[in-house]
Length: 224
Image (cartoon, one colour):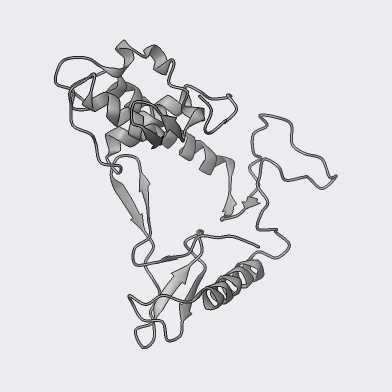
């Protein structure tokens, strides 16, 4: 069964850079119904009779999902929903070489078209975000530490963090933890600071930095 993300367009947003939020406004609705959308933020459907605060039963929700998928397919004929640019075959049925850059021509994937210029911009944003995480990781005051101990003092270059093994059971927390949970544990204990909210840019940036340091390492969730 195909799976997709659906959300009310009045609430959907993507965090970019620091705290900027991109919103996708819903199209005009009739009779106060709810409008749902695919993850692409473009394909929408007004659900007749569904009012704000109401929920659909599984059968109706699946029907709405199928209608959204059909609408997306009509707008992107011949493009499988599951295709990804890194695994897409060319006209001769060959896969691209590892590390090959995208041509200037438009490429297709789940969310639409993009070019190498788009990829360049996205890479710049990613690099800036990781650099910010690197800065915070090395500055105890930046993440709210109170005794001068920064993350790098125990984990130089994010060593011995093993981001690719999360989520996993973490002994210090006595429960299954995400990487950000362990970052907060370290902030609260060795650094004597206050845990950061999940949506705090500093926490997200440090998480991105730690994960970037493990680039190329196979993910193995639950592995100690």
